[in-house]
Length: 510
Image (cartoon, rainbow, N blue to C red; front, side, top):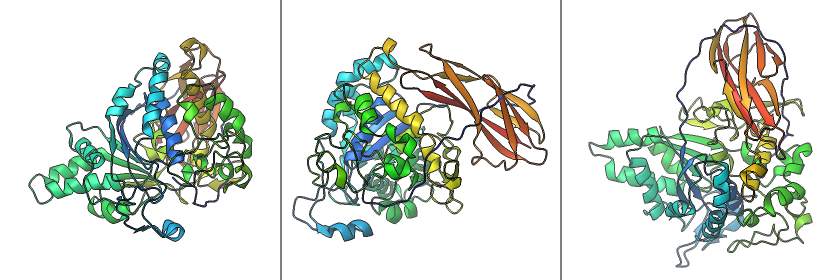
């Protein structure tokens, strides 16, 4: 990600409908298979916001199977070939900004090491709070250097591209999410190497099908031209989740995207006291405004200089204010908080909401056609599908920061929700039915339950009303509408850093 990109934003809010009542449902469950822990490979150009995304990701490393951590390049960061070769960006913005360069703001291929060393120190504490955290030695074993010489370089095989290639060709048929925090060039090189080896052979059809069945790219913008020039034309069936605007509430321009009432979640008092300071050696390396830190190799990383706060490009900031984690939605999408979005990015979740392209059925994207109603501005808003979750995400981050230094008994843990009535139902127009959950809290905290209709998701265009009584809600459908209706049960505890989990009910009205 980079902060040299301009965007306009609306304000943030969370529109919840509280409710109360309780008749019998007449519904039929449509079962869905249990979600397995998703496999993922991260490719990163190492910008400071990548470092911050990486640190947060490590606190959630029990939620997905990290299968690779790959250094790559982008339009903003590349190493150069060491021979003084001049390179001019293919991307219009960086071409105009930098012209011909031999290298650009390159942070090197060592920056993961101190983070993994610090993770190793906090691992015993993290491991008290949840099962499944990988060891630091395991994470070190999956670090590779990919294609880093120049923006978009994909001419040669590298350790990183070979590593991705091997994962795409292995016998594990589970999907593998390829996160592109920088350019897609190392991913593209892996695909090109597969094509070079197999295209024109009897095995090609099967190999192609295996790859497109497994690979899902989650890209934050286009940070080189390799997807457009190589991947899309040569692997037209390969799935891509493309986030071009919703990520901005976690990026450099967050002050413009996040509603003012929620700015405290990104400002120094919260970030410094609740996350960065006194939370162990890993979070102490988290980059924030005015913290005195400077990333070696990047002469444009001035954010840590406390004398530069009032002249920062994106506004005026305070010490320990949030800088950026523009790439975090790529793995927030993988965290199972009960929204069932992993296989349905169009349903929306912590990684935003992406709709399937009408022209390219393998592509899910945000943008001007993916709008949620923002009650603070009374407008449909292209950024609100991500912003609506910001408070829950930031409080969850602070709770996990406590895990780095606190014993289990002293920290907060998320509620556990079970659907009592089927989570997949059918109903008839005009019907009234009840949905019900059960929620418990491992810490014995009090729980607040809300039910709300996610109107922008699904195909139900009619009126539906809710009334609730504790952990039950009654849904009243109008007599003239059919389609798919989404009802969210949201449960939040009252811990020091409240944690929120969900249960999604999907109702087919027909």
